[in-house]
Length: 138
Image: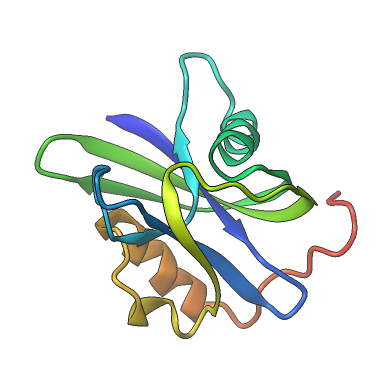
């Protein structure tokens, strides 16, 4: 099982960031919560910070774990670890994605999400509210 992180980045309007993978990549054309594979010995929080800086040019602060999903793709099994995050610095440059969108959590399932991300989107819809991330986490 391959551990993979997913950043659930929430803006001040309560919208969640999703990104569409470039067509030539695995799951090309699918929307996803940005993130990536953990390196050996790497903490999920460190992985999220590294991946989002490398692939999107943004710095983030990781707030709290949200949900974990086991998913079997045809060629690999992953453990997707979702974490609430907020952006702390922006110098946008997309390397693995061709578009980003800020979306209401109630509209996430309107997008063609990567299979593993669907369960996290469903869970986000069930929350009474998204956490406020305007101040430093405790």
